[in-house]
Amino acid sequence: MTRVLVVDDDFMVAKLHSRYVAAVPGFTVAGVAHSGTEALRLAGDVRPDLVLLDVYLPDMDGIAVLRELRAAEEREPGRVPVDALFITAARDAEVVRAALRAGALHYLIKPFNQAALQEQLRHVAALRARLDGLAEARQEDVDQIFGTRPPGSRELPKGLAAHTADLVEQTLRDHPSGLSASECAEAGALSRVSARRYLEFFAATRRAEVSLRYGGTGRPERRYRWLGEGNSGTT
Image 1: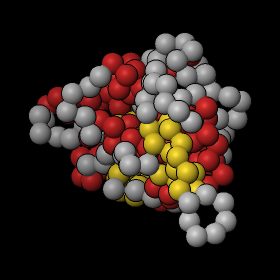
Image 2: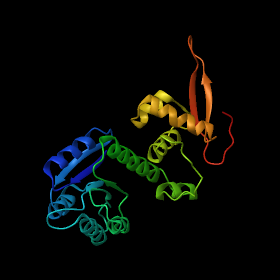
Image 3: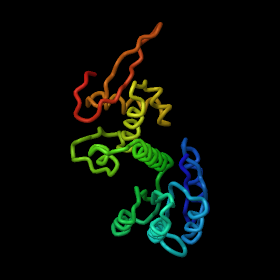
């Protein structure tokens, strides 16, 4: 379970974001703060895995909060590092750059819908699962974690999102024997239609292998098994 600290000076917005978080399987709201000082105190008390940070806070900006959290981690070697996702109306490029340098995983600009935030949360879950499952990283793993794949290594068709593609890929990797679209959708908390689109994309680009499983009656079930980059498995 990923424990989340929600930080926003607007009480209603914080409540809304908390509801979005709670609706994603595997995530729970560990605390809510409405100022930088309160966020730092709660972070020390509840020790969240992820903090959703607004930039505009009444006493200090969110960038400073994240820097203070990083400093606290350095002072306390046994303290588990917290990931950070900025959720803010701040559009200035220098602010975005500062968030990146402070160690933010991503930056969502308000206003956005529930699906946008929940997609980011699923992306965080996929990253954490990938890192937790690695004893030694390959360059492919590093490129995907840092989002630095060379141009053209994965050109997604219009309507497909990179973060959801990463989630479906990780789900396939976690099930080496293969999955149906329904099973993938359940494991990744996606709709079956959405999961099927990404699975078919991976099959078409030869990153996944498709096999048919015949039942008693009706059409055979399509099952997908991850092959990886640069493979030429049959589809």
